Amino acid sequence: MRSPHQRALVLLTGLVLLTVGLVAVTTRTVMFPREDAPSSADAIVVLGGLGSAAVVQKALDLARAGYSDHVLISDAFGGDTRPANLCGRDPAVPGTAIEVECFDPHPTSTRGEAEAIAAFTSAQGWNRVIVVTSSYHVSRARLQISRCYPGVLAVIGAAQPMDPPKWVYQFGYQSAGFIKAWLTPAC
Image (cartoon, rainbow, N blue to C red):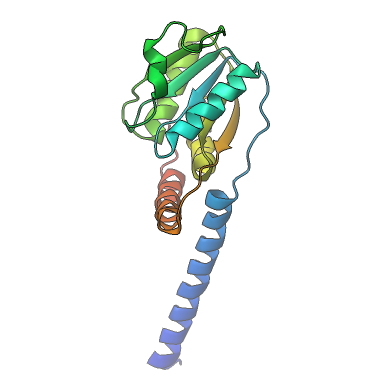
């Protein structure tokens, strides 16, 4: 029979091992996500959120490189997702045939964006999509979008410099979001 001290030590050891394992897994998914190589697609979709100007720029660079001439920009979180009024200009990107369309997903979350991608691509008959998001969001975006969208999906991150407090915040936020997404498997 174990003493209360031994039981507490076993419990503490288990909690430490669980925490270390969780940190290792989330470090891999948040800080070092697997990114896909871009290939020709029906559309390039920009997910909203922090650092979205860099994400929009990466999507436009991919469009200019010929991966798609359709860019969809999610404005789920407001802010800087519409640089230079891309959605209100015709042509959106002067000197190109690139079409830009903005959308407001409901709910305003990654899951809402995933549902909007599935609905929009189904309505258009598209089956190949490149999703561009912040680098720290790549793994969670892939998980949630792949549950809603049955087509070919490539997820690419756009890196942006962040100071240590923002990295700590994003690490915690994305880790919690990934766990929530993992525990709620429905689209």
